[in-house]
Image (cartoon, rainbow, N blue to C red; front, side):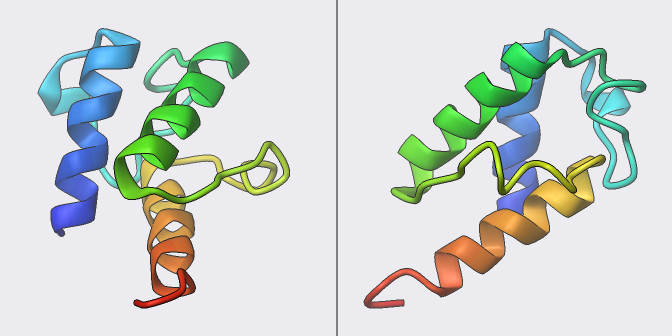
Length: 82
């Protein structure tokens, strides 16, 4: 849940949306109005925060916030030293 909350804060800041709009099942484009550039900026911010790399390929099948959190958690757990 901590990962979700941290990513939620990033989405609120980068997408300029209300906190209530950011739910696990919120669609990044349809519900949160995140265009591809905003999503890539979010991926960059997440990568910097967690010291992981999230590529455009990683995001191909990501539609909602919950799926993004899953990708991030997978990357964190596969990081050397985790």
